[in-house]
Amino acid sequence: MTAASSHPDLADGLPSPRRIVAVVALLAAIVLAVLDGAIANVALPTMSGALRVSPAAAIWIVSAYQLALVVTLLPFAALGESLGYRRVFTAGVATFTLASLLCALAPNLPTLVAARVLQGLGAGATMSLMAALLRFTYPQRLMGRAIGWNAMAVALASATGPTLGAAILHAASWPWLFAVNVPIGVLVLLASRALPNPPGSSRRIDGWSALLNALAFGPLIIGVDRLTAAPLEAAALFGVAAASLTLLIRREAPRPAPLIPLDLLRQGPIRLSVIASVCAFAAQMLAFVGLPFYLQHGLGRDAFTTGLLMTPWPATVAVAAPLSARLCERYSTATLCAIGGIALALGLGLAAAWPLGDNLAPLVAFNMLSGLGFGFFQTPNNRNMLLSAPKARAGAAGGLQATARLFGQTNGAVITALLFGAVGAAAPRVALGVGAAFALAAGLISTMRRAGGGTPGPGGH
Image (cartoon, rainbow, N blue to C red; front, side, top):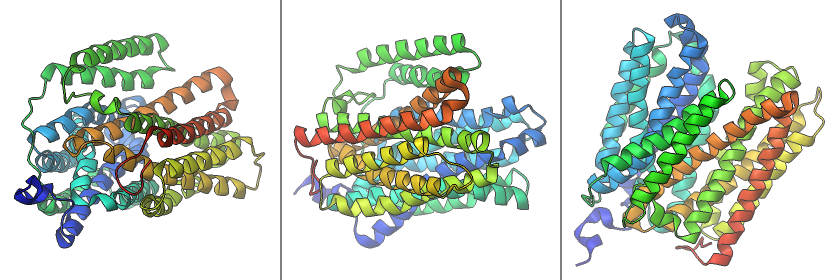
């Protein structure tokens, strides 16, 4: 009797009725985490006034969530491998739901920030294990589609988040921004019973490594936030992050399943996919930060118009991601990623160079091209990253994927901040040009996978 037959959750995917419920639970959980970040960003001015705190203090409502999320992705991925993916994921959903209720009931800023930290912990557990659970939910031949649906859900949540937040604030007070999560979270918990439940490895999690991980990623995020206001303080924080990461790598390197997945990064296909992912998400963040300043400060458009003009990007990602997922089953993922990276680079390059004036229709087309390229890149790249890892390390691969995304976005934000200090008013268009260079690098790096050998499944390298 094989291991797969003795334990049904080790088979190649779940049977169809159970699979549908499991996918609904996973997609709803990731949508909750993404929407929560987008809605909170929009509502900061309202919450600042209602809680009678300064805008600078109110930013901690967002920063606390982001910090807790970043420092827990890899530890929760390791914990999921040890205790079982479903167990840790379900605990994350329960924590996020409870924290949402605490946010809604928070009487002041300190209480709200503490609840947001708890929310970030819950989101870290769900986001880090999403990919691993998808790998056990779908058969390997359909993993491209699974990742495509996930990318579509994230894109739609990103596109609708600001509008949904504004609608809630128009109809009710700010606590309802968090209260609406509670019934959805309860439904996700009920549906989570359908998730695959492969046994954990019972491997011990090193507390010192988890602490070093927090000291590596936490100061990095705070340093990015302080870079323009206090450069020396930011430099010190970056130094702490670099030293902690060095110590963490030295501590974990000899281990067969390290907290920082060095074993996976030693594999060429995964390493190239991670580097390409960092480049692509840096390009995305350079555009998402640069475009609003370009439209509002450079072209004199208001915030509402800016939001409308940027919406075609995530909307096109939502269309492109499932399409590229199906193409993964027939064509090389390296080729699809290269096409996506080049399309993203072309869209950003045109947005940077085109002489926009009163007619902004070209920018809509450029954003759609960028979204098309990003959607074509993201799904096959994530598929390659996940399926190149052994199934026993699916949690680490998922945590690595999420960390690469956040690291790329952080780099994009840092570069944009530096450009504002270096070139002033020209920074938004320069940022788009730099983003185009990163996107092109992502596409070119992806072609190197073809030379390095194949990946599992028909999508290959």
